[in-house]
Image 1: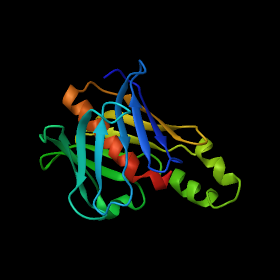
Image 2: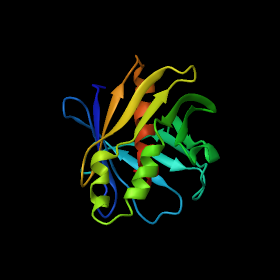
Image 3: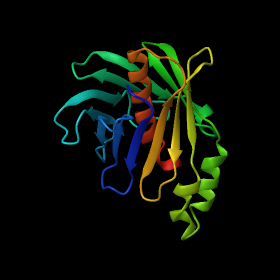
Image 4: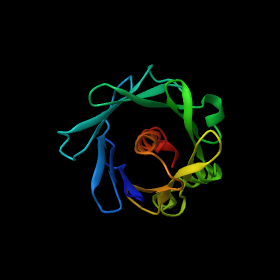
Length: 194
């Protein structure tokens, strides 16, 4: 993948949509989340027309704080999984990225005060429209040994979520893929937090 990647999240659309493009502007992933599903299931496509499914991400249970989201390729082969770290994620968002049952990476919110300010200021009329421009959370992706490999940073935007995914250390293609797909799913799960 050619980093940095740009992740655009359309919040005002009827169904949330995410597109991920690389540094050359080539679309890598496209997701249009289906609404009103009890058990989360997301299909990741390689095109906006949604003709080329690349991955499937499915929750292992219905609406649970610690659900495990299994990631499989188009042929059904397991790629990995991502899950929220339960009660530890109440203050600061934390996720485990798994290969099998082993933790391959962790995703952690850099500064939880950003979402607190967003919640407080988001309740004030007129100001709520501008919080997306100056309150920008960031999430670090690290290996179990603490090496930072990626970072997701929200960029200033008024009507849609714009994020940049940076690579901070050398990664093999499978690790890159799993990291980006996990960040994509985390973005869908954290959309209410900023």
